[in-house]
Length: 304
Image (cartoon, rainbow, N blue to C red):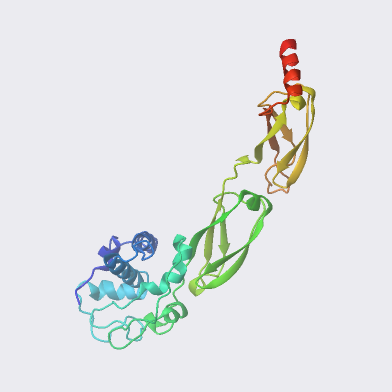
C-alpha cells in the first residue's frame, strides 16, 4: 500500500497541536462529506482518507507510533504501540471507516449523516466498528473515543422570548433540552456527557427574525396601524406583544411615526425584569371611501 503522510493529508505540520488537528479535520471533513458531494467518488475517497488521518493523529498513542515509524513506512510486524492489542501492522494505518461517524455529522455540520455498516478489516484480521471506537474495545490499548458534538439550533423570536422545550437527535439518540426565556442569538447551550463516547453536545442558538418586531438590546419595537380619525381625536388601539395583546392609549393629534412606550413589555433580563416595548404609530386612511366619508374628508380639507 502506498505510504501516506497523515500530516500532509490534514494539511498540518508535524508539531501541530490537538486543537489544530481537530480544526483541520472538521474543515476538510465538512468540505468532502458525502452529503455535500453525492456520487463523487473522489470526494468520498478523500473523505475516508481524512477520517483515517484524524483517527491516527488525534490519538496520542497512534500518533506516537506514526511519528516513530510512519515516516519510513516500516512498522515492525505486530507492533501496535504502547499497550496496544496489535492494531497496526506492516506500516498500515488504513481500514478506518469515517462513515461510521456520520451519525454525529448532523450535530457537527447541521446535516443528516448516513449510517455506516460493520467495521472494515485491519491487516491481521482485527476489526473496528463504532462500538470499538466509542466504547474502548481493542483499539489503541482500550482508549475511549470521546467526541464533542457541535451544532446549531434554530428557534423563533417568540420561543427565545418565552423559552421553549426542544428535542434534538444526536447519534441516533433523542435528547430533550430547555431553551431559557430571554435567550439571545449566538447563545451556547451545553448538554454534558450526551455526545458520542460521553462527550458534550454544544449548541449555538440561532434566533430567527420576526417581521413584526425589532430587538435592540433589552427593548423591542413594533408598528401599529392607527386610523386617521383616531390619531386626530385620540383613543385606544390594540397592540400585539410577544407575550399577548396589550392596550395603548393614543393621545389626540398624534402623527405617523410617533413612538410610544409600553413599559415592561420588552426582552426578559437576567434579573427577572423586562425591557420596554416601543410602539411606532402608522396613521392610515381607508383605501376606498364611501360618499359620506368623502364628504367629511372634503370638509376637513377645507377647514385645513
